[in-house]
Amino acid sequence: MSDEKEESTRPVCMHRRDVLKAGAVVSGSAVIYPHLSSAQSSAGGVNVAYPKLKIAPIKGLVEGEGVSFNYPLNEQPNVLLKLGRPAQGGIGPDFDIVAFSVLCPHMGGSLRGRYQHDTAAMGPCPFHFSTFDLARGGVPVHASATQNLPQVKLETDGKDIFAVGINGLVYGYRDNLTDGTLPEGAEVIGEVQESRGTLRG
Ligand code: FES
Image 1 (cartoon, helix red, strand yellow):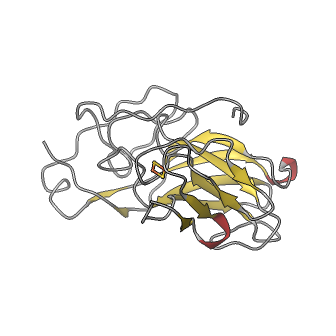
Image 2 (cartoon, protein in one colour):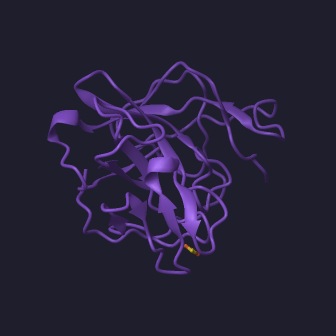
């Protein structure tokens, strides 16, 4: 985990490399994914399993202070936040713990460090000033973006917080689980989900 100070860089879509295969179990930071079969990579989406990644203990969270983490790939930056108000998709005793991508869905501007705690909003984006409501699923409330900020699905065992999926397509990616490596400690769980996007080329 790193703090909020570091400025993120826009992820680059590298050449198609390796993709995730449902059911695989991984450990370590440099994971090479097996290729999907042609049936799995057909148009309309691919069946893949999102990894489960421990992010932070609930107890250590401070309201309004973000915890940065990369998920579902090392190249995809997000922030975990305790909003101090119930939120769509929120977990924890107060249903106020959420996590979102810090890559603006409009054209990839970095939203790192742009959380406004008084309004639970993320933004304005430095590129075209979009702002997103984190209590309402990351819906855009101002300026250019037309898509929600991708929201990380969270779970808790009552002690720790885990990322287990993501709603929305991370900016710059044709699929959230292609063209990258899993974060250290990520484990692929058995649940098979429908991933957005298609694999091409
Ligand atoms: S890139 Fe964020 S508003 Fe355009």
